[in-house]
Amino acid sequence: MQSEPKVDLCFQLIGKCISVDHGYALCAAISHILPHFHEDDAAGVKLVRGRYIGNGLLDISPRSELVLRLPANRITYYLQLAGKKLVIGDHDLMVGVPNTRALVPSATLHSHLVTTKNGSDHDRFTREVSRQMNGKKVLGRFSVGKRRTFKVHGKQVVGYSLLVTELSEEESITLQEEGLGGRRRMGCGFFEPFTW
Image (cartoon, rainbow, N blue to C red; front, side, top):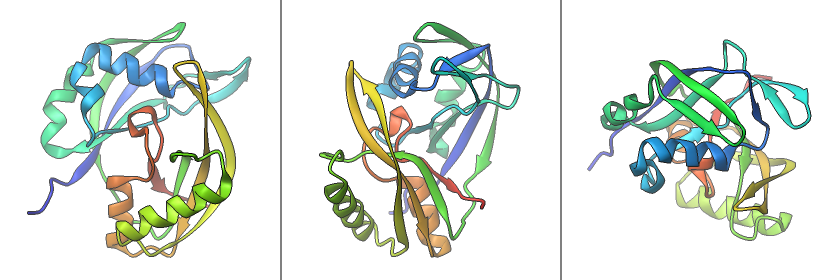
């Protein structure tokens, strides 16, 4: 049976700033408004983009968005976020008007942060990414980028940025829909077309 295709549900964000390390707090804030999100394995979230302004903070610009990647048949549920206030650590953001975007195949995809079990060991991380890609029948080549850390329940978690190239259209959509690694509701394993 064909699974429901995924789309990006994008909301404008209104506010001043947000911590660079906001994945866990963002997941908690969404779950506070929509408790089902905490258990929704089909949903992923993109880390919020903004300009770094020092002291571990990102400036929220008019182009900053909350992006949820989810099956098209769940859009109605998540539309309830519009007009709500997200309390993300010490910062409040208002969720604005939503729109949807279809996933676009690209031969090259990038994820800002991918985590795997025992991912602090670079070699184990590489082997696990290879295993997961093979399991999804994604045959592209990948290269591991910057080592990154973030906090979950006060503990440091290690991950890496990841670039995947030489993807077919089908492989590209599969990787965007399914991601790699864990903690997808905290912004990990979220793949987007990469522009050089």
